[in-house]
Image (cartoon, rainbow, N blue to C red; front, side):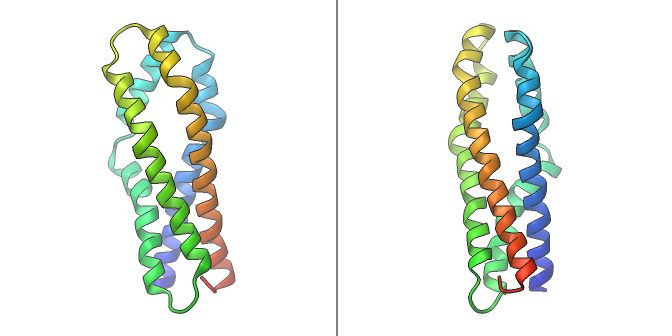
Length: 150
């Protein structure tokens, strides 16, 4: 049972790391090519669409499953602990940085140039960190599965 939970955490972490990677190397650079209105309205649409059961299952499921795996795997489990820690940091970054920025963008009105100026640089930089942190979490969980030592 513990291996099943660990592999489920690994899969969820891989999916979420891939999502943030895709944002960093394609979605955000693509939106950056547009004018202010295109950028703001595009991000507004994405921010609404992403809050769905599939995203939430992977986004919250990865750290929850990694946390459960910590308790199910007996003995030393540094890879699982590290993976869990990185995935918690990913959630914290999202809650402390991205959600407030998304909410401000949603409520910001129609001055697209001002909204973009307050939003884009911070959101992009923190997303790169979030992509790195979630990838590190995935890597640690992969290390746990591959070594069998947790």
